[in-house]
Amino acid sequence: MSILDILKSSHNQMPETYKHIPVLEMEERVRKIKEKFGSMLFIPGHHYQKDEVIQFANTTGDSLQLAQVSAKNTECEYIVFCGVHFMAETADILTSDKQKVILPDMRAGCSMADMADIDQTERCWQVFQQTFGDTVIPLTYVNSTAAIKAFVGKNGGATVTSSNAKKMLEWAFTQKERILFLPDQHLGRNTAFDLGVPLEQMAVWNPITDSFEYEGNTEDVKIILWKGHCSVHENFTVANVNQIRADEPEMNILVHPECSREVVALSDYAGSTKYIIDMIEQAQSGSKWAIGTEMNLVKRLIDNYPDKEIVSLNPYMCPCLTMNRIDLPHLLWTLEELDSGNVINQITVDDTITTQATLALERMLQKP
Ligand code: 13P
Ligand code: SF4
Image 1 (cartoon, helix red, strand yellow):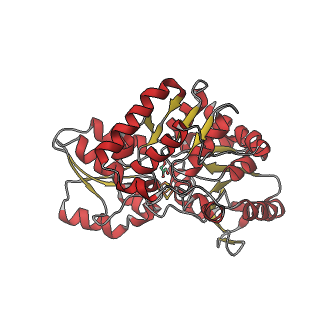
Image 2: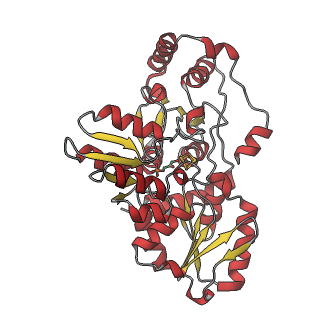
């Protein structure tokens, strides 16, 4: 379901009163419910979540780690997912029917996932069959709706995350001559480039105009990049890199591959959320880092590693607005409703979509 569908549908709104409860009291109430529910309740938290929420997470991780945790999680009855809508959908797909997945705020969508809808995808697939015949395998970044994952699963493809994109593209090229990569053109382009695919062999599919943006010979196309992007990571620019290089030449520049090709090419290192965290953890005391990723994570790295000099690559960067929808009042509200016997904001993916999306997710999770 896209964020527009969610906003159009009637969903529970948090009562105003939750906004006025003192923080210490909210924390205490969350703690009590967690204790009461024990192992029946599980709270996964993505690294981009706010500290006020992440302090209550049973586990934290990037998209891949959280999907792996969901796949192994057969015990708990309630999963209160501190992340965004597509992550909660993935958790629902990978857990059993008995387990209920809850998103504390239904408005916590992802603008990138909303850039590919299933009708657009079905339409482009028809064009590809006519243009390329049966030579294309679809891959989708997990930052996509369950319907897109199902489309990919049904057509022999798989999901990828930023942690395993390289491995998944390598696998896909053993299956078919060409890849359709949804919905993040930058992750697709950066990963294919690392694997040696020249930029001239990468076409862009524009889902708004239903047309290719490509000037070469269609025979040469190796990867078709869906024209989507992350509205957070596209805010790191070449100008930001040039500024840091001019002001602080000894700073290491470390960015997420959702940044543009130009920014990644000018940076010293690029990798997934987990890669960024590991790099900073292993970096020498006193080393200097300008990081191009979501701001809640950058702030946490600054706080956790005071012996290293860490700044955001873009000094005017904000956190991801949709990740930030999950806050302490919403977490407390959903938990208290649960405690009163009401499961609110449950994320449910229908059975057919679940079956087909599982194919795509399992092709990824089964890779070592
Ligand atoms: P990863 O967790 O795969 O690095 O993805 C980043 C992201 O944008 C999540 O929304
Ligand atoms: Fe979506 Fe980007 Fe926010 Fe991740 S950081 S949830 S990709 S908008």
